[in-house]
Image (cartoon, rainbow, N blue to C red; front, side, top):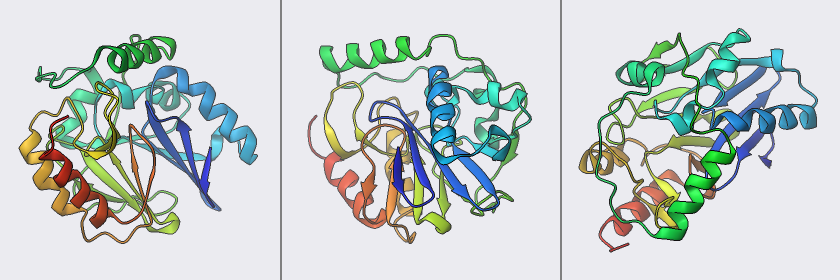
Length: 239
C-alpha cells in the first residue's frame, strides 16, 4: 500500500511493516509475520523493483511479530539490523514474561487468528544480525537514523528517514491496541517496562516528520510531538 511518494506499508492495521523506495534502492523497516512475505513480493511487483533492490532490513525490536520474513530475506543476502540490546531476542525469540494488561475477547481472538493465518507461530528467527546503537546513521537508502526508545524492550528503536518524512516507531507506541481493539494513539501492550516506554517518548518529540508509523494500527499523519502528547494523555485514561 502506497502511503506517500517512495513510502509504502505492508500488512495492515493489525500488523504493519514498511518499505522505503528510493533511487539507490530499498530500505525495509520491520518484517511483520512470515506470511507478509507475499505482501512484500506483491508490493515489489507493483513498484517494479526486484528483490535484489532491497539493501537492508531494520528491526525496530526483536519481537516475533516484527521478525516475520527476516531470516528468509537474510538468506537472500539482505543484512538485518537490530539494536544491540535486542540482538539476542531477535535471534532466539527469548523475552521476559510481561503482564498482559487489559484485553477483550473479540479483539484478542482476532489478533491471534490473524497471526495464525500469517504464520506467526512458525517464525524463523534471523541467525545473523548487524547490531546498531542509538544515534547511528545507517548506510542504507534514505540514510535512516536510529533513535533509542527503550521500554517496550531494552533495544526498541525508532527509525527516522527524512527523505520520506517518516518516523517508524515499532511498538514504542500504537494506534490500535491489539488486545482491546481500542484505536487512537496510546501505549503499546506487552511492554517490558511501560514507565520507561512513556519516558522514551521524549526522544521523538523534537523529530521533524510528517508521518509516524507504528507496527500496529493506522499510520499517523502528523508530527511526532503531537502523537507523543496523545499517547501520554491516553496513558492516563482507562482502556
